[in-house]
Length: 190
Image (cartoon, rainbow, N blue to C red):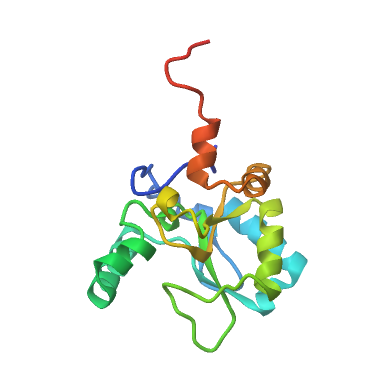
């Protein structure tokens, strides 16, 4: 069974996507953007509920380790280390490599691949309000950069399942805070 609460960040990099599991990835939004099967199913239900695919586009979903390395290297060349460390996860430490993360953007003629426009109002606000009921969290909220190690990314959503997404969101926690809170104290046996 898949651990949807697995923490993937600079300090924690569980095996993201094991070769041979690619059949567990499915396209979303009528595009070639891939997500893990359960996450994709939940996203499609959410988008159907809010009629989202007419105004929101999937920008980036599952990435291979090689693609994450290419994105990191390109951003480093074009934007420098500080920007890259703020907005691009290290290869092997990206939630995108798990198939559980998706970057979404407001449907426009031009979309920034690294930082797509996903405001807090309109259809994007509606998505954000409904997302926890379908298992998704805004993974990198503003004001929590010191906790997550990543800059504020209002476009990046992570599937963790229900009821966890609603509990975490209502409590104003990041995945780091939630998993630390849920972990039993070390050294205490039954």
